Image (tube, helix red, strand yellow):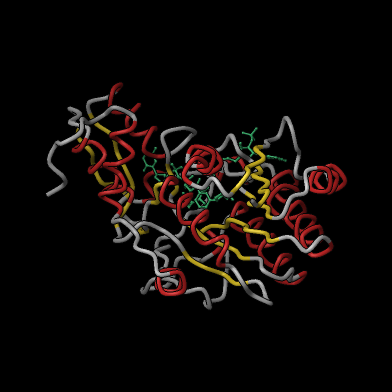
Length: 296
Ligand SMILES: NC(=O)C1=CN([C@@H]2O[C@H](COP(=O)(O)OP(=O)(O)OC[C@H]3O[C@@H](n4cnc5c(N)ncnc54)[C@H](OP(=O)(O)O)[C@@H]3O)[C@@H](O)[C@H]2O)C=CC1
Ligand SMILES: Cc1cn([C@H]2C[C@H](O)[C@@H](COP(=O)(O)OP(=O)(O)O[C@H]3O[C@@H](C)C(=O)[C@@H](O)[C@H]3O)O2)c(=O)[nH]c1=O
């Protein structure tokens, strides 16, 4: 039996990890969030891992509001950088495995081929910068048997995400406008959660390794919104617009597709397409019924 600390367990990924604990009875999950374990508090985290004999930390806690981060530089850095640095130090001192989650937004979006783990980061917004600093701190402190998993466009049944926003907007409006010049791959948090708990026992590395994980295939946010509307049979038109027209506060990369070959080959895993993963999530939120035809 391994004792695993899940930070940010009330978020999208943390909730999905908690939901599948039954499939992994050899893990005892310790579910914490801001109210029970603030990851910015070094001694609180260290005491928690000592008192509960923690073997593994899965850090799902993060500051994830991309637009708000532009104005909240200090707090986003505290959570996405300083707290990660602290956890890396604690992991090293107590010989724990640390699984840290990062983002496609550490890249600048200028690539024309999917980003592999070796490409240099160059974040263009404050959220991406804070996550990049967290990654770099972890790489520098370099606790053994620790990894960074970068993922992209995460969504789940619970929490704030693009899928739920589009479902909500499509109830309120006949027409929604969505950017068509940002390309990536959506990721169902349930798929990532399953992969994390599957690979945890197999992690064995002297130096911190980076892996990329997303659902398979690529799309723009516009195409993603179209698929959400189509599968959910909503009577709403999705219109393509440019990022310039949408004019969000934070800059988003135009291309942030991740190359997932390394994680697939290292751990011999299959990853669902983004369309199938979306159907699975929408089924869960009762937008579609079992047995309905898959996407065309
Ligand atoms: N969401 C996305 O699209 C993507 C996310 N990621 C990364 O994946 C990981 C998981 O993301 P996701 O599940 O979507 O995140 P969420 O925003 O859904 O959840 C993050 C959780 O962390 C908690 N949290 C924030 N600050 C602290 C703190 N100081 N101490 C303890 N807990 C805290 C939040 O609590 P509260 O709500 O109270 O602030 C929330 O419950 C993150 O590292 C994120 O950067 C990567 C790519 C895409
Ligand atoms: C809701 C909406 C968004 N958009 C655009 C805005 C933005 O460019 C894009 C995505 O919008 P969101 O704000 O939902 O997503 P965003 O917050 O950019 O999502 C990111 O979150 C962080 C945490 C990550 O790590 C990234 O991988 C990514 O998932 O779609 C529209 O064009 N029309 C709309 O109606």
